[in-house]
Length: 112
Image (tube, rainbow, N blue to C red; front, side):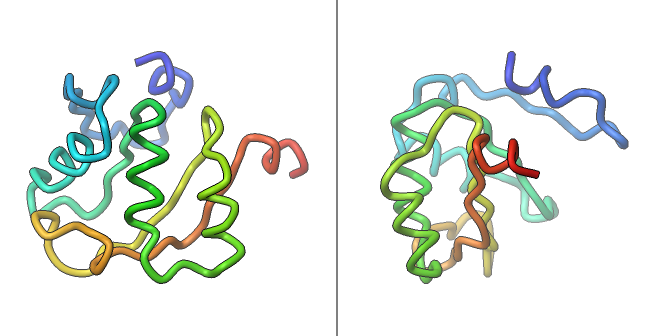
């Protein structure tokens, strides 16, 4: 919840749903939450903790550019962002349906 509060103010208020499994969930629990997203939802910002979030991101990396995937596998620091595209239905989310678009760490944002 602290991470979410740090993102405020929003230009347009998003629909925010909290789920207890996100707090210290492992990759299987986090993936299960994604698979329960309504098919009408176009995008999701999943905020969770490590090591579960890091392990899920690595599992979903799919056909990522090699440099981005290497960086993702090496470390997923606090406040990092892994952006994925999802082809197909939320209920089918997995390595074959996702592609890593970009991986950004807080250190990279300081350089902007």
